[in-house]
Length: 169
Image 1 (cartoon, rainbow, N blue to C red):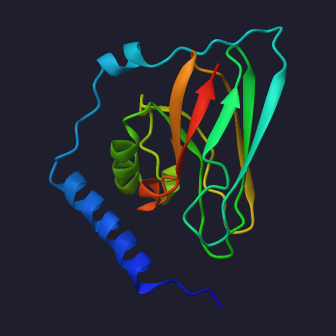
Image 2 (image 1 turned 135 degrees about the vertical axis):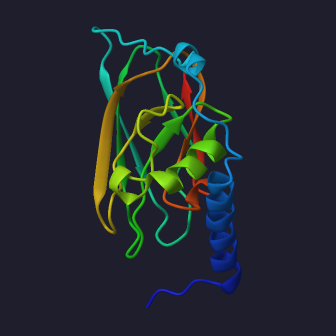
């Protein structure tokens, strides 16, 4: 039997409702066409080895098992998400740092059919589809330019707690 603390449930419900209110009221910034130009460009190098980064969900906690991942610039990256939760779907979404709250909130209105990711969102650099309980999902992409990027889970309300950094060196 899975149990959640009342405090954790209220916090998650508050995050979900807060995001829905902000989305419904139009308080979130609309897509900015200039953002496409600012989106970090992949730096794929055909001679660079492909790398796989494995990351898991910490059971029923709203956390990834790694708060930081690293990859070399120019690499072809595969992120493999192992959802160890017995009850909740999760995903792995790489976003431009500073956009995680807006991407998470916009994901609520995008819904389950879009894995809680707004279609064609320029702030989203790579993502897995939702991995159901005890399932895996992966994504392969070219490393963005050197820098620090944020990854989150966009299942409603999770982006506040499920996050980490991807450092491209």
